[in-house]
Image (cartoon, rainbow, N blue to C red; front, side, top):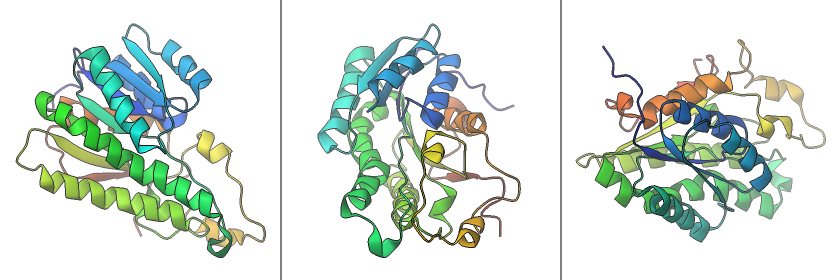
Length: 251
């Protein structure tokens, strides 16, 4: 029988926790008994998440993860508050659709900074703590890591990078007591999705090519998977990227 998901006595850091998958992940980890450092740039919404975490000890940490030093500071704050770190869940993400030849440089750089650079710098700061606790890193990739999605070149590049970064780190630490994995969700109804705008002249039949036949993925289902991978119950996962996309990348 598989081990139960039990995070009692453990501390987890979740980015993007002000809404969407980050918030759902924080709730699931709290339900499993973890203490939480929740991180986001949106302090007001982060406070709302904190109120949803029941009896867990919670540290709300407002940070702009586009800045490498802010990534290091979030990990430092979590370790100082709880005296340990057992899981890092890199959930924060951003997507900006654009015609590639018209995409603003600032939008491209921000996409890479949040989706790819931040998980690296957070992991870099967290790994020494996670080695002490036999902990875990869970990165958030996307079905966009495996299929080309029109008007989303920067997002696809960042998510493909996350998958191979996960595998590379997993190999590097394959003889050390740490697990490093990723999840690859399909489209979910989150604040990111609700705030999406398409460029002028978009060809919607191209967008339909990466819309699943079975509809959107439930946020709570993905949060359950992240929680499994972050917990000791995910002990046999290392270097995996688990697709949870309702069949988008099946063929």
